[in-house]
Amino acid sequence: MPFNIEKDDLRNYLIQTLLNLQIHLVLPENASFFRLIMEQTQRSKQLAQHIHEQGPKHIQNAIACILTKANELGLITCEEPEYSAQLFFGIVRNLEWQVLMNIYVQENEQENLKYIHYCVDRFLEGHQKV
Image (cartoon, rainbow, N blue to C red):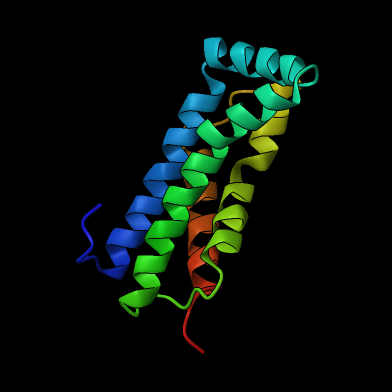
């Protein structure tokens, strides 16, 4: 993402990130692999740490960097970008749990888009200058 961004660019980037995550999570082969990884990490703390650092933590750090830059540019107020990145990924937490527990039900694409747009808009509202 270029760093001479505007607010709409940030919003679109966050929406696209969530859509990509959603698509990645619900693919049957990825969902099965995700469940297998969760099972295996119960047996190895080192594996769990490695998977976390190379997957979720890596993506979370990328989001924190974007939020930091958007804060520097005055697009948002984000004093704790790491916390905000964690909050951002909470948007897909319910989906992750459904996939992990093998109870995911394909929802309406329009409803998914509506949910993601709603959540990103609320996320950005929470980062407005006061």
